[in-house]
Amino acid sequence: MAKNIREIDWERVRAELAGSIEAAKQENITLIHYNSTTGEAWRIRPDGEVTPYEMKNQTDWARVNALTEEEIEAADTFDDGLPDDWLDHAEILRLPGEKVAKRRETH
Image 1 (cartoon, rainbow, N blue to C red):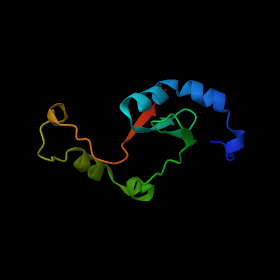
Image 2 (spheres, rainbow, N blue to C red):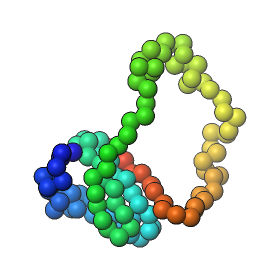
Image 3 (cartoon, rainbow, N blue to C red):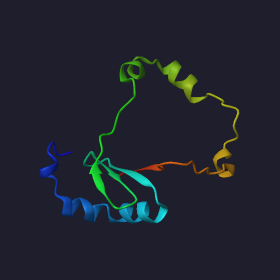
Image 4 (cartoon, helix red, strand yellow):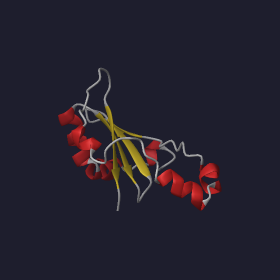
């Protein structure tokens, strides 16, 4: 991401985010659009305003890197008691206030 907001090629950004901008307007939500190829992240508000967004990595990589194979396997087999298709039966709740959805673009 460009360090200075004046260095951003806004024409390119708005062209690349056209679908996300339209989705934010139609759904009346704020989207966070992340492009894993460029590392750019953008906040897109329902009014079409686009601003740079800094992704916050909260992963404790030292802890992750210290895991043994056994610990990784044990974590992978964790049973939370939910059926595998639980998400198919989940109800989407709309909460009052600003709605935020994250969209991740992968290449």
